[in-house]
Image (cartoon, rainbow, N blue to C red; front, side):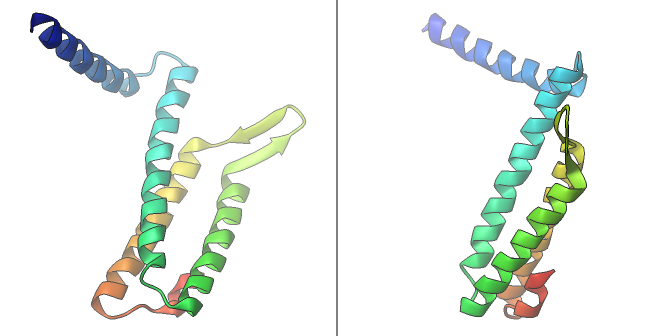
Length: 125
């Protein structure tokens, strides 16, 4: 029983340490790790909102949503990444903020569908 409690306390303290490590990263690689974790969560939320909206749309709405999403991906990539002879670079802060804004846009469309009906004309934004 004491081993279980000790293990649980160790896991809990490990989680607390992981959170505090992102509060004040020690170096650029730690900062990158933390930024990536936030981006991954934003991307997960984006995918959840996309699927929720897609499930509420008719065939024309689904086509408009897909076209809008592909255009958004291209815009995000153009704004937040670049390829140079020395490598490929991604500005994770830009990618995260752009993804959060798109996720909010999709969530707003889900809310519209639930309240006043889906408005396909807004999906191309």
